[in-house]
Length: 481
Image (cartoon, rainbow, N blue to C red; front, side, top):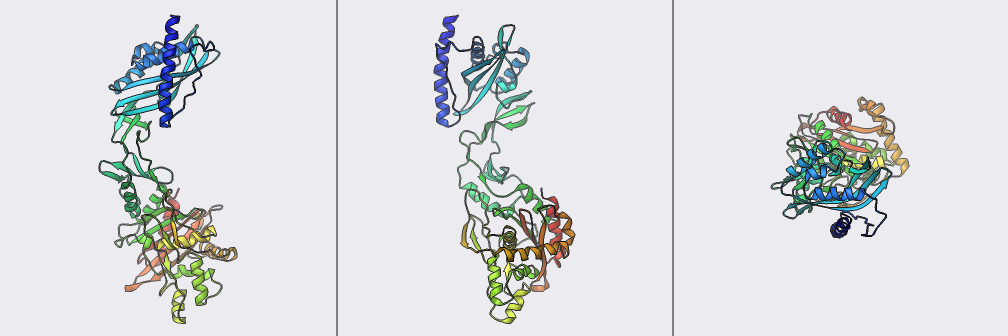
């Protein structure tokens, strides 16, 4: 018996070295092995039991492996289920260090499954052991097979997995890989920027759409254990927030006229929501639709040192009104304010009319600048920074304080007072509202504001009064997480 054990131990060392070399080459896991054939410090009994267990496991002998455990019946049931669900798979386990503490021990094991077609699944696990009546046994639970398995669960291979292609800022999928390429998880989510996300994803190599999963019952998938598969492409991360995007979409969908809402994180410039409703038929108005700002132009008047043509033009530029950016795959237009050439043109500008224009994107950028106190560069891709084509320098703090006070008064005493209750702590709501005359007797409805690190702008085409945009803003703020 002693000679057999020594031979098995030498074979184990060879197996460990070979398997670990593969793991190191793949960058998966490094197994620390300090065993040698003549190591007398090896825990007596515990190592042999662990060795016999992993040998039986590798040979798919569920009954033999189960007899080495504290609960042979439950272990046999679990192991037979695992082997039955993986009929064509082979498994190789490398036994590493075994540590003991009194009547307990723990063995480090490297496991590798091979499923065919070159598909492999490797992971480290711990095999706990206990000593009962002088005999070492594996303290069995499904976690011995895989650390994430629980009672009643088993391992299975799943093909055509919905592997994420594009994700939001928290890693939740916006697009997944389908049979014919990337496709949206939810059809109407972030439709404005969907073309950009599709194009970016299609330029990448599709991953292998298979995974090792934890299952229970007949067909209930619990979780993915292996991620995207051995050659899975990492998903493209965006700055969008699915909860905020859904809240924005729900808000604009309340309107029967074309409506748009766009939101930023002023601290980072992250574009967290871009929404417009089904009544919009002119393309991405939330990003590039230019409209007269009407009375929301009071932001510029509050930032100007006086109401001369030059002062108004400088104040508008300092808030980002004339800024321009290159966001990969996404076209944007902030707005336009030029120095008035005469008193008539200036009078129109002061009312937010005439040759003054802004987009929801631009107005959200302006209030983001007021909130942050610095120039803001909008970002959409975490891995692909935005290029600044026309930059700007924010007003000084004294000027910004005046603009913030103007916006806060609009909430506490003015047109946005119906939203006053939505302020809390440091997330006090600051806002401007307004209407703007347009051709054909239309009056567009505007709202722009920020609360904490969330800034946004709302436009309702031909909304009639500020109440339309105010209603959209209120719903968005109430439904945001």
